[in-house]
Length: 197
Image (cartoon, rainbow, N blue to C red):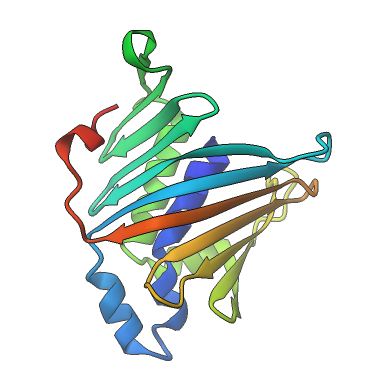
């Protein structure tokens, strides 16, 4: 789950890549206050013949709210809200909620999200090499040490919206996670109940 949430921070780098060429892209991006989307995630593992498929919902609201909810195959999720973080498993009376705010990975994820939300190009450039694609970008971590499991991240942008429609995370092992975003709503009101675990 850490790699998935970590990669969500990349949803906010659409403008830095193209800002130099087209300032209207940057202007449109800065107007995005909320994102709400369905997702389907395919985890391709070398030990499995078919991908593992998960579905769910993604919410983001500036300046620092992010919610990632798995609805299938097992209900679970994580919320980052400022310096607070929660995770949960189950639903209804079986739901188990944990405050994970003090855990190191939650702090790292929150810090990464703020780097991308604030469009800190210096920090982004310090960590990743960027290569433009048609309607997308490839990010390659500059840290190529043994502890770095990610080989590259490909972001595919929707030509109709200033949003990411697909993320491909390719690990050094060859395992790959693909996330397709659908029913993307930008700048719509996120109800209070959607902000709770």
